[in-house]
Image 1 (cartoon, helix red, strand yellow):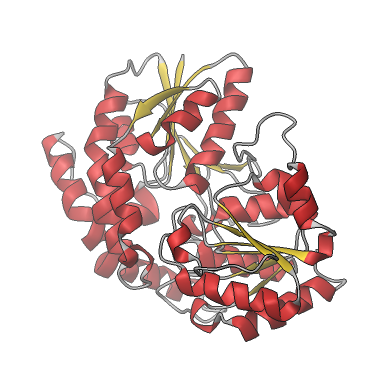
Image 2: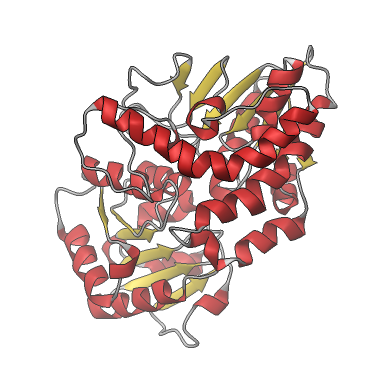
Length: 387
């Protein structure tokens, strides 16, 4: 049997799928990953067959669009530039295989995989990397666009979900998806992200139960596996002597990242530098896009394009990041105190869950500055309760 693993998104979305592919390959399965060409070399470097979905130019154009991170416009940009253009290509890739000799596992927004299952009976598991995409009227995920009271009667939450689908999500995702369904001879659907995207055969959550307790109205076929850790680190990879020397004692160094896909975080890095100086600490600024950084950095602050989280997070005092689920998982594994600045999508819900666990503090992006950051970091660095 061939196993096709399909994913959309940035490194935080791709890395867990690579980790899953490695584990399946070690068990003797033939595995292929369907992803953006941006990740071709990474995937092939671990000995997994790669199938390109979309073009490199498409991926890079999404990164260039600052409205991707606009709380009100981002969902439309995500749909029009990332999700909807990949429905037909992903469907075509999957249906070029034999449904009797192929198993498919695809992340939440790989809608072409659901169509291949529905039309041609490909066995499919839907993979959710984050708990916020699994709806519940009993434990409502924190939604980036809709501020709900913490306690609402379940019937009210159900009505609100219906309104979100009808007035927002189905209007964004529905026309293109239903046009293609019509071509395939399939009927029109609604509640696309609320219900239809979940495979009726299997739903897998790549997060632990202690992060998101399963609810009685989750899909009945849902199983949680815990986090899958993969960050590109080579076997037995360690910090260079130069980096180890720079980090110094654990409590003296901070690490800041706005996420691998973020090219529009100049204010974040400026405030982070100022907060580091205010606290008298050292810092690593992780980004591939140096144009976001101040022109000159003090000697106590170092820019690094990339470093595997698994070899650095256990050696620092605190970690400041955007709240992507992959980053959260690596930070939890390292046991490092976290300061989360969630921008949108699943990030506010991830941040709230970690704050409730007592392992993180949260600052809204509009309130992130040298003063608020240094205050929260001082608490994290000196609190015996946060770990």
